Image 1 (cartoon, helix red, strand yellow):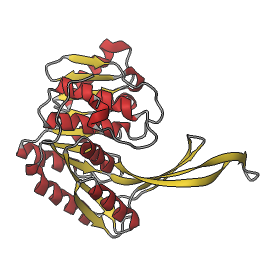
Image 2: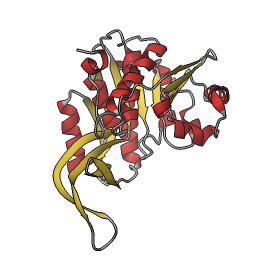
Image 3: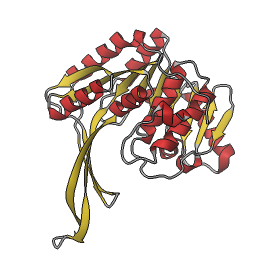
Image 4: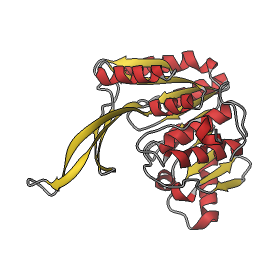
Length: 310
């Protein structure tokens, strides 16, 4: 068990692609006569914060102050994100795009298994992106750490300008990346790709030495302070500016659902750094939090009581 950390003084600014996660739970008792697919009789509905909104939720669940900068539509899902986040104490700086449907991920669950995911998404327009950039400028001075949560939905189209704003303000930036163009994150403090994301950028590796060489080369090219690679059942590996490498084993007792686990990891890492934890300590806490949240169904959060014991 880790030594208890008081996260309450932390102020974390979360910027990125906010979305609404919808879950339809049901029973599967037969196969459709129309096609070889299961018929799900829906019994229960549930809605949760997703994407960058889930990162903010996780920051708040640790007891820290979270500010969320994101773009949503002028629609019911956008209002629901605002209400749910507000009820958790998240400070909201939402840009509204009248032409944008709020991003929704709809998951159909039967017999405790995800059977189908349906995504509703569009890219935001230039006016909403400009308003979002203004919101980052207004909020940056009041934060200790900024998180950029990229889900590839277009909300971080101006990521280079956001990084420049943070550098000018002297604020560290933790980036949860997306896609194969990591050059757009040049100058961030810490990049947190998962194993598959890193492989798509640097190629496959043969053993730990080869991984370290490729990771450090990428870190140097992108001018990062550190590269933290989440490796699922293999744990996490940290590659720091001083050329050192550090690995921690996975802490998951039972993997039930990995949805949103990356959100929990980046939120815990950033919150720990915001209260002055050394990077190695923050990494250990993030690893423990990730191991807890994969034992829960769907996007979820972790409390200090779960992280440290009551």
